[in-house]
Length: 384
Image (cartoon, rainbow, N blue to C red; front, side, top):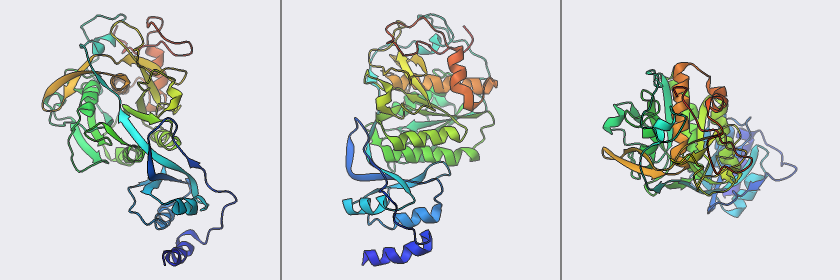
């Protein structure tokens, strides 16, 4: 009965498409915890809303996410092997990818020091010097566990914009609030006047799915034009999983929409090419340093790392008006998102060339234990 219904729908919505010469690729993320039976269906860029809806009708399960920005189109859904095969043979499907788990990357430890390093040429300073423009007129999207928007250190500049993981518009984990604090809080922020927007894609346990992360990025592309961001938009993803073509393509779509994206390189002490979205060339991938000006022992590395930033023992905001000290490339990335917002506020660069500009202002030759082929450039705000 269902097959008959499908045959009735397709000629109207898809103009009776012919069977493709070879099936669309079925991809599996590398080095990832695959979620059995769940998939991300990436449609070709020429596919409109009606075509996407028609393809969704081929699947019995309720669709988890629909991606319908002009940069990344498709949907995420549970499917049987037969449904996967049917969609693989549809000419408007670019590829299908197994969904997988994605996690925040942070560990508990240490003492506060990182902010001051951005305006000093050596470790150990306790003074942060910055231009008072401080990211004013810039919007920062934090794609993470949410933000405690009522934390007093955000001074009313934080908004809960989207929730792609549950019905609880709070930060039950703390990771996202900490990241947001490094980007733009009054006490711990690099850009102390930036507007902060929470896009929740990870739950209270700090984990989520590739499909949910893609939905969060798709939301940013659609939402940013409606916000008051005259100086530009930065996006931070302090999260990652195994290599995923779909996650990388969704990240690239955010960049191609004219936004700057900072991404944590990952905490596996391996090449960043194994992780997504860190392996997407168009994002600004960030490795972590510690307070001795050495590459952090856990930081991923390699030619895809664009810059380094403080990541170990970083103090920042925490839910319920608290603070906390945690470590990870998750803590390094928001330093770069924050300095990106800072430079945009100054008018020093455009979002399109911001990663290169940040790298050009960074300090080289002072970070120890950096593997061959990895940058040793630690970010600076120009006030040293």
